[in-house]
Image: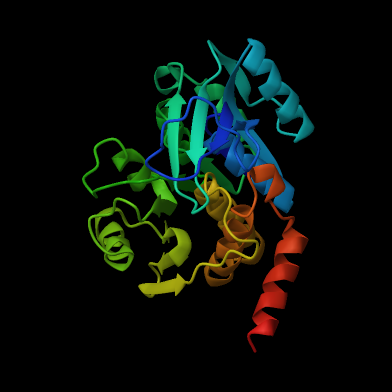
Length: 302
C-alpha cells in the first residue's frame, strides 16, 4: 500500500497553436478545452490506482463549487477517505499546451503551501504502508518527519530543481529514498546530477525525467547510471502530468517487482503513452496493459 500526500486542484487545459501566442480576439482550438481534477498529489495517486496499487491520498479539499467537483472525482477514483482534510478554497490552474508538447502553466494555490495538514491523520494513513510519496508542496514538508518516525520510506519529486543547494527542496532531498526530478533546469547533465545527489544526500534511487529523451536512473548500490530513451506510441498531445505519470509507474513496478531497471523502462512507456492524450484519465494504462505493451515493444525490437 502506498500513501500519497499532495495537492488536488481543478485544471483548465487550453490548446494553442504554438509559443509565443499570437493575439486573436476569438479562437477555435483543434483539440478540446477541458476542465478536470488534477494536481501532483491527485495525478500520482490516481495513476497508481489505475495501475492497480492500493492507495491512500492525503490532500486538502474545500467546500466550494470547485471542491464539489474534486470530491466527486476522488470518490469515483476510490481516493476519498480518511486522508482528505479541509481547505479554505480549491486551487486552480490554467495550462496552455501546443502540438509539440510545450506547455505554460498558471497556478493559483489559494494559500495551500502555508496550510497545515494534520500530522496525526497522516500518521494514521501510514499504518501498513510500504512507501510514502510526499510531494513538494509546503503543507507536506512536516509530513516528511512523520514518515521517518514511522519507518516508512519516502519517495519525493522535486520537479524542476536547479541546484543541490536548493533551500526549498533540501528537506525532500534529504528524506527521499527514491528521488524524482526534471532535467529542465539542472545545472549539469542528468548523469552528473545523479552522482551529485548520491554524494550530497545519499538517495538510493534517483530518477531524472528528460522529456522526449526519456529518463535516467541512478542506483546508488553499485553506482550504476542507466538511461532509457523516450517513446510516444500515440504521438504527443499534452505533456502536462508526464512527470507524475513517470513517478507513479516507476513506483508501482518497483513495489511489485523490486527491479528498478524494469520500473524505469515501463515508467517511460507509461509516461509516453500518457502524453498522447489531452488528459491523464485518457492516457493511463492499467498494470496489465502496461506490462503487455512493454512486452510487445520489446518483442518487436528483437
